[in-house]
Image (tube, rainbow over the protein chains, first blue to last red):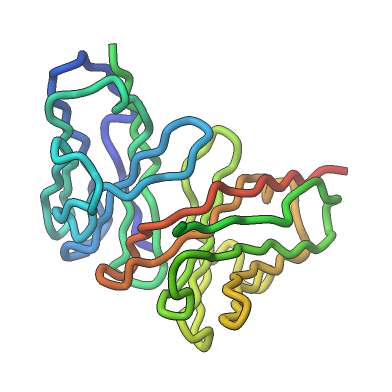
Length: 107
Length: 120
């Protein structure tokens, strides 16, 4: 299986700041990466697919980049509602896997 | 309203079987591949299984292959997960999710989840 490793595991930032979450794959996965946001007790929401395409309805302050084995999710101009756990996911093959998650706290 | 709604969770004893359902509404269910994803308490997301839009192809994560079966009934707009030989570590919230199709493997619609507790 393809392993995804996210870093950091958790982070804290203030409203208005920007943060970047990294996702590294154990092998090259082209751009078959999606990013999700999950608030406590809620279902995940798709933010980014194909590494850099913003999902319809997702705020434009979310952006993704990368290819191969290194991917990033950047959240610009943080808002209080961005407090959540973020997951990367690969779909390079039909054995889909998720990263372990990154918890973002808004101070 | 475009939505997915899971049902069938609850408390079940180890070794027993259970079937989860996911009812789709507001979109043409038969156009989309579907997935099951689970989340153990306090843990991350774990992909489990997918099924093609026509139901003829499926694939499973290694940890459920042979114990769980994904299926669908397009005439009823419903996705299923048949689970057998349940274990304590199957305790989790189970989500069904829709594949975007445009970006295979990206899940653009999720249900609210159904909780399963495996306990004696």
